[in-house]
Image: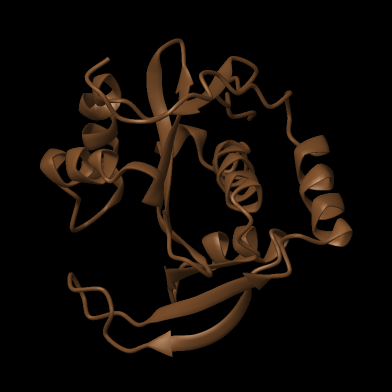
Length: 188
């Protein structure tokens, strides 16, 4: 018996705005045992150029989101979440493509993240993007004291890494569509 997968041809990645927060918080609550609050997301959006948050939408419904924090010499993927019906359909790849290209555009050539030690699917996704294990943060996750695997991707500014991103984008089930590349935040 075939399973009906959600269509991904109408997914648009756009900068996260205040108007997206209701959908973002709903998705956060459904995917994270210790969800971020709306206030935390609002505070992140107010951080200006030191943060970059995007949403993936289908027909104006938030089906995914991701965020990056910038430090002078590196970037940190702070969050990636995708609604369950859209998981393993290329939505997280779209979010990471946009986020990591933003990192590269800002002249940063290394990015890190933490992922649950048991989340093999997410680790596989990150490995596709060139992330490699760099250490363990013991009892990092407060909900169950699970360890986090720290992963790093380096040399983002190389031709080889650009080819990696182009290959990931070419493998998406439908073209990557990006809307509204202006500054984030605000009350729109």
